[in-house]
Each structure stands twice: as C-alpha cells, then as structure tokens.
Amino acid sequence: MSGEKPRSGDSTGTDAEDDPNGGDDPSGSTDVSDSADPLAWETLSAEVAYSCPGFDVRHEEVRLPDGTGTDFDSLDEPPAVVVLPFTPDGEVVVIEEWRQAVGRVNRGLPVGSVEPGDGSLAAAARRELSEETGYEAGSVEFLTTVEPSNGVSNALHHQFVAHDCRPAGDQALDADESIRVDTATLDALDGAIADGTLRDGRSALCVLYYERFGDG
Image 1: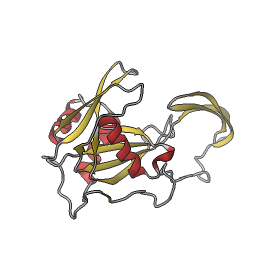
Image 2: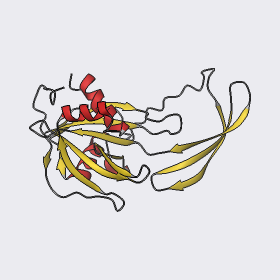
Image 3: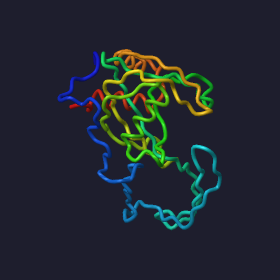
Image 4: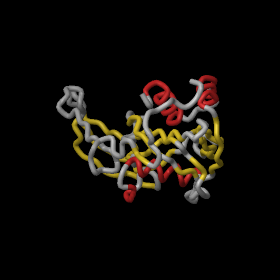
C-alpha cells in the first residue's frame, strides 16, 4: 500500500458508524454464546481470584464435555479501542510507549480501554487518540472487532480508522503511561510488520485489516 485509501463523501467532524452493534452498550459486547454446542464447557462456579488495575483474574470450576471436572483461570479485561489515525496528508500517527512486560519501547497505534462515560465506541476512539497523542480526528469509522487472545482472556478490541487527524493540544496521559508521538507512512508500517520490528499484535492486525478491507 502506498498510502491512505481514498474514500467518498465529506466525513469531516462525523463518525460513519458510532456503535457497530447498533445498541447503547459502549462496550460493544455482542453476548455471543455457544452454550448448546456439544463442545461447550459447563461453568459450575466463578469468582475473582485476583484484581488489579486493568484486569481481573477469574477462577472457574467447569465441567468438560466428557463429564470431567476441572479448574480454569482467565483474564477478565475491559473492552478496548485500537485507532489507525491518518493526518490530512496521509501519514499515520503512531506512538512509542514503554512496555514493562517485555522490557522495551513498543511502537504502534493508540490503544486504550473503553470507559463508562464514553457513551459509544467511536467516542472512546476519539478520546484515546486525543489523550495519547494530542491529535483530534475529523472522523472515525469502525473497522472490525476481534478477540485477540480468547484462549486466556475475554478481551474485545474494537478497531477504528480515523481521518483528518490534526494536532489540537497536549497529551493527557495516565500516571503509568510513558508515550512519545511520531508519524509514519503506511508503507513504513507495512515494512516494519514484514521485518518483525513492529511486534505489537493489536497494531499489526489493525493496519493489515484496514489495507485488506477498510474504506471499501
């Protein structure tokens, strides 16, 4: 890809799809359940074993399809938004952030949890972009929702593309965020994904999904 995809219409100051699920729940939860499937496990009990800022560890006693009982532990995480922000000249606004879990600076896209006061996923995307980068979007458009690690977590990541993003103020970072802002071309991000220097899975998936399916 050589740059931002062309799109039709004047989208300045608008959100093409405020809530991709068409409801009032800002989490975007679709409550998909396959409890009647013969592969389904039966939950016998559930409790929060450990809680900390950002996630809970949930402990469950379950019954497997063959009748065996066992324990299962998983992360209970709030939904999050991932934002692919384009400036008016087609550059992508990216962030570099210290990630303690891997002990290095991570280069990628703005990402953050949906908060109760957001009102919609699009509003959450706008807020996260503004807080982490100081940029404001002319428009945001929903791309897709993915479950990035559903073997160990119930996390939902709602991906958005933002157009006409311009600097509008200072960052408003959380106390535990260390972030600097940069821009890159879409080609450069493609190259970084290909050579393994962009290792943030949330960002890589959002970029690749946009290139394949976005703004069609």
